[in-house]
Length: 171
Image (cartoon, rainbow, N blue to C red; front, side):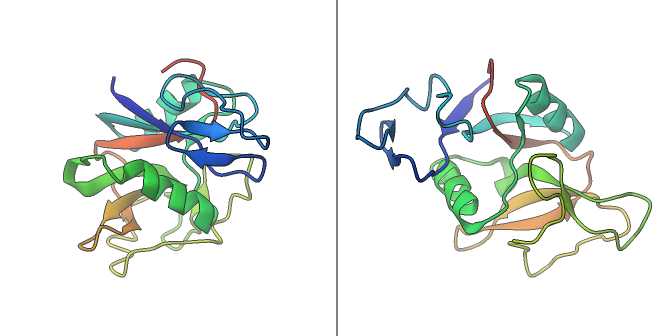
């Protein structure tokens, strides 16, 4: 399985082309080989198409704190944008950790992780959202005409590449 890894920004170090540097500018591990315990919020892109639930299961099986990416603020959105900048996405789409209940047509969108406030507050919804509020219960990112990444609702059965967030034990 092909993966690309990028650390997310933190206040304790700086992102460089070779990975993170610690606050004293000493390099940490390479972002393509391992996850530093000092920076557990790495992003991992997997260029293998899976359904949303199988993508979620894959991420969760790789570590106790691993999940589909939770884009809870502009910093994480910028990190995901950077991660995908040079990636050829199948149909320009990728799964993220957004879901909503299948039992209510107007149920709120939630993040899958219990480590963050589950209700979506920060958002990057596409102007076409929602595409199908009755049948679409999973969230994906789509690359729009100008290369910008926006969110859309989707069928959970669609198969797309995905992004895991968190320290992965093996990938």
